[in-house]
Amino acid sequence: MTDPSRPDAGAAPPPAEQPPVRVAELATAQRLGDLVSCRQGANPFANAVAGLAVAAVLFGVTMALALLDVARGVAAATFAGSVVIAFLSLFALLAGFTGAYLYTGGLVHRRSGRLSAVRWPDVTELLLWRAGGRTRLAGRPLCYHVVTRSGRRLPIEAHVGEGRDAFGELLEQQVRQGGGQVVESGPYAGPPPP
Image (tube, rainbow, N blue to C red):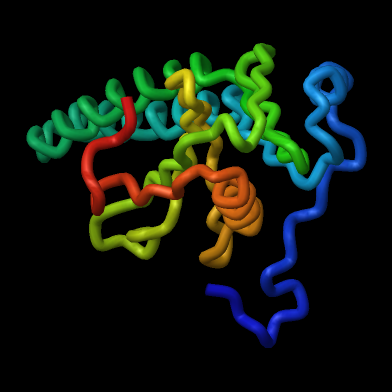
């Protein structure tokens, strides 16, 4: 829901001034029309470095607890946590750089330098992957999955911010106008998309 008292309520996020050249060339070749909005995914290197920093802190706590010979259970838990976080941080690098560019006639999706273009009528579903649990993020979108007629799934990160994602709202609107369905997904609606 949008707050009508806010001057930017319901406004679409501004489009990029200039999309990357390869994106613009693909959009032109596919005749997707005008750029409406864009979304850049998180930087995989920054995510990996942040994760490794947390893992290093947990490992330091483990070493301090081991040297003091106290709280062996806590030391074991912090060590396991540091290993898991370090491992997951390396997976952040595999995600690569992502981006989505909404045009009046379709979408250009970028993942690790590979571009895909899809027209709105070729999108069958938009899966809204929502957070579960009892945290402040519960029910908010974490990711969108654009599903095409050929079965491709194009993931797009959600940016929740203050509780709404104007880009996501615009994406939902474009999918519906193109004849696709918007489907609730995530812990509240079932397993994640494959």
